[in-house]
Amino acid sequence: MCEKENRFIEKGIARSYTNDAHLIVPVYNRIQDKKIEIASNILEEPNIMMDLGSGGGGFIKKFLIKYPHCKAVAVDSSTSMLEVAKERLKDFKDRITYLERDISSCEWTKVLEVGFEFITSDHTIHHLRHNEKKQLYSQVYNLLNNGGLFIHADEIMASSHRLQKYYLEMWDKHVRKYWNDLSYDSRKIWEKWYQRNIKDYGGAEQREKDIWASLDFHVESLRHVGFKDVECYFKDNIWAVFGGIKEI
Ligand SMILES: C[S@@+](CC[C@H](N)C(=O)[O-])C[C@H]1O[C@@H](n2cnc3c(N)ncnc32)[C@H](O)[C@@H]1O
Image (cartoon, rainbow, N blue to C red; front, side):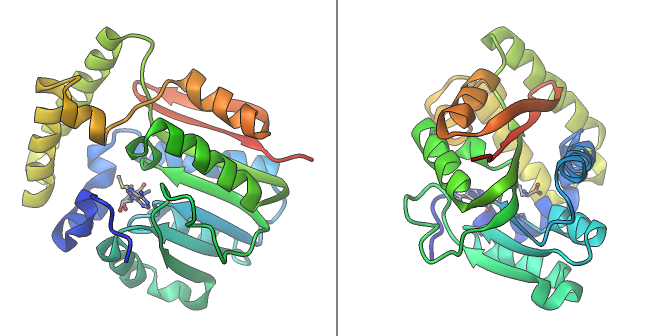
């Protein structure tokens, strides 16, 4: 329905990323745990949350276990990813609604009821162009309840290219340590990632696919659309977890 160019549209890749993400991203689980820690500090028992670019649904699973009365909306533009999530989260039955939507579009929120208490996204928004990121922040703000929380965890741009390259090289070193544990598809994707982000750093393909923005850009854009208490909750190499509260 809305599969904008996205490597996760291939079923094999959707499945292997979901299985291997905790090995590929060194802070994968820490990020999820930090988000839950912050959310439980700021929100009372949430009833409804939304995950943007929800992938195989790992974060939703953790969140719904922590909050047994909460329901979730899983948004992803990849049919294959949504199928993987449905299979893995089948025990949660009607607590999860699956939405195939491209979050870079200006109309993906049409017909959605507003009133979310928590909206979040991991490792996805850096694929959107900067103007689309700003548009998304405004859409998220409108979807939240008064008092609602948004947390975004993602790859960001360091304060210099030199530092960014260093972080990327560190990431590659980490992945090579787990090379033999990765699936064939994950290794294939990683080799392409290596070519694009390390060998051709700054090249057209990298700029098109991994459109990193600085932490300042994110924080200022969140404030600009009205978020309060905007804060970076965690940072490690190129990963950051940050967000804000809608308070009218
Ligand atoms: C790197 S995966 C991360 C998945 C999940 N958040 C996680 O932490 O494991 C990125 C996800 O974002 C989805 N995605 C990429 N671009 C998207 C877009 N424009 N709209 C909606 N989903 C998108 C992909 O299909 C994929 O499932």
